[in-house]
Image (cartoon, rainbow, N blue to C red; front, side, top):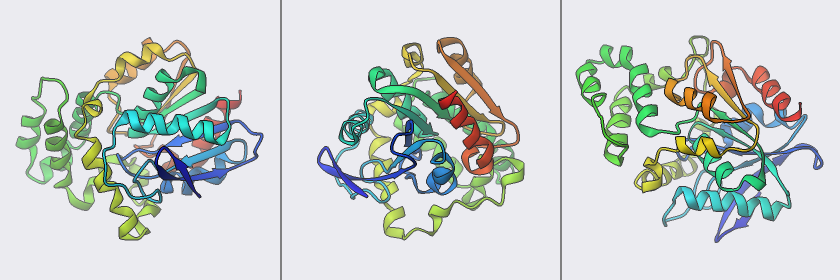
Length: 289
């Protein structure tokens, strides 16, 4: 249903018993929406939890927008949604770019977050996009793009919008085969159901991504925030995930006081879709143990 939050209407999907532990899902993209995650995990997680899926402002089934979007605005939206729904605290789960938002939210509102779960997050855009391009090197070589990749991997400065655009644009040249980078070997036939949504709904992701990737906050490394996490934290990593770098994993394992790391053998970037039963069990067990 559409819910009035801070001057716009956000699409909010609630499932599970009203008295179960509440879990907020934050989608990635940027701008991907919650439709795919809910298709694979909505009913599974709702068996033991109160799952709240939200489309971020301007995305998918939320109202379209034509104004600014920043990470700080999104964090404020999540906190206002918690207050609106009447939860004293809730757990937060962020997939991919949503894992970046989950870290910001948990660090900035520790009293609102009981647990935090990250699935293949990009906390540092230099490291994450480097890992992404490196994972794509076999395909880029096949497409005659190896020299361009090597040039982009030579970047030595802080993250910038230009760096993001250059690295992601290179991968877009792989066309439909780009998805192969993100999936484990046994999951190459996986289809995300959001591909069947109307173009009008899917196209909202473009404005969101274009806007937020040009903000300073998008390029900020969030690794220093890991020290600030006080809630129990779980990092879910797919063995073949091309986003979360070894350096980011190391920071999580050394900087987070109550951190648990779980590797899903054979999975890629979409663990929740590639190994849905095991994923649901891991998330629920972590939150309810």
